[in-house]
Length: 124
Image (cartoon, rainbow, N blue to C red; front, side, top):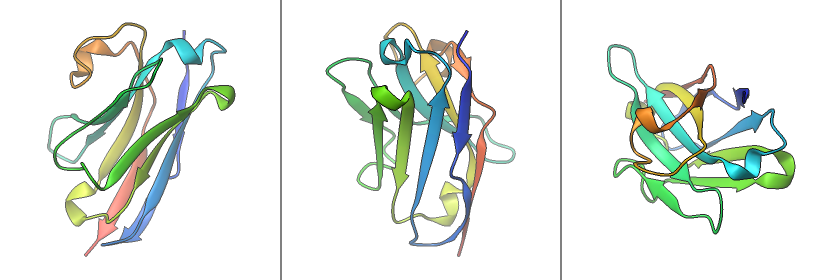
């Protein structure tokens, strides 16, 4: 079992920045592929970014490419999402997720564990 706890959300003006953190409970964190997803009111949960467990590769949704950066610190059991140039359409609850096996990193079905989310609100 892996427990994931997100932090770093908040209210920011359009064009601002935030850094989300996701702390994992397991010492085997380095084995997991990690992803960030988001869900806006009335919409389905959508992929934002992912980072693989070793020789890390990163993946991004087209809507955030060039603005968001995912990274991980295995010594701290933490994955980060740096969000720059935020837009009102980025407003959502952001979820961290962990997947033991690789595959389609864009799909929620790949991920075995989920955090409870952190709210990000971008005002215009």
